[in-house]
Image 1 (spheres, helix red, strand yellow):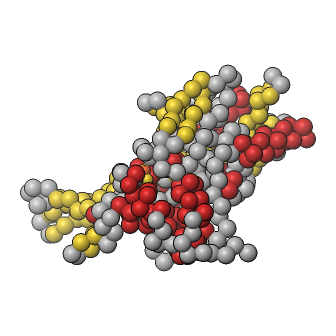
Image 2 (image 1 turned 90 degrees about the vertical axis):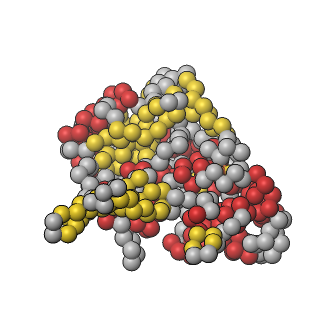
Image 3 (image 1 turned 60 degrees about the vertical axis):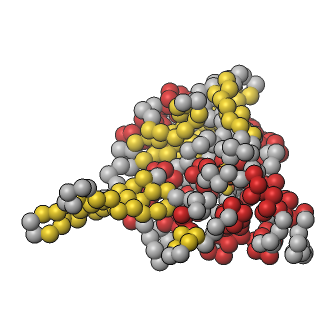
Length: 373
Ligand code: SF4
Ligand code: SF4
């Protein structure tokens, strides 16, 4: 492990640019911290934090110049790996027939800087969906293979986070090239950096930073313990899969359905949701056609439409599908829950529906009892 002054983060950006990466990092746009391409570390939200609660998000000035003193915003890294609107192919009529151009390859190599531990877990989940198993997404694979990840451990617990209870944070365990922990205390401000891959180690060596002292490593550890202790929300995951599967007619589903607008915000901000629709578009002359993939959501009536009608015709059935999939049937499909505890669906739900409270309500008033041994 090495210790970096904040200026070292500027050198880190330069080292990544030198290797041909486009750097994507948190930055402020239109009153929120989002992920976008940035030219240097000066575009990070230095000295800002985000205050989050159910249906509430606002930026505030911090009393220091923290580079990473905030948590996750409305964007997630999935927009680069699994774009919201993506052309799958285009065809053009020629004298001999149609020329078809697939648009599958990605020209860009991205360095994601500022990936939170819960987001690493979300990327690992999407890897299982898009890049493992029988059906693989070649575009996802092409982008994913070229990504360099600089993770940032969380020095603050966000208002809606519950990663500790999902075992996905606040410390990054794997899946990164470099992981940083920012320490601000007693007039000092530095980052403890560790490598998680060979290329991460090469970049850190090139930066020529000093070895971290035991005191600096200890200070970083203490901050992460404090973050865990400060997390205000949690989900009891024990037997949750069985609990939800056994309670499809629980009265709580009706209670939520009366509040839920079926707006689909929760699925759009979620870093693991992967539902999409495919549209074919032709021009009026009949000479061009395109196939476009767009993010969709289990909250739309059309998403479950098959000949004759939608399978999930009620709000209750759509909310139940979302939450039961996230916390129960996802485990059957992919071996882990589909929720990493990032809290985005709570913050960005316009009516403040909180997945942690709903899971608790179902557990506390079980219709079909699940014994917890
Ligand atoms: S379900 Fe909510 S808390 Fe869980 S990963 Fe998705 S947005 Fe984050
Ligand atoms: S839970 Fe909230 S964000 Fe999700 S569909 Fe319902 S109202 Fe919209």
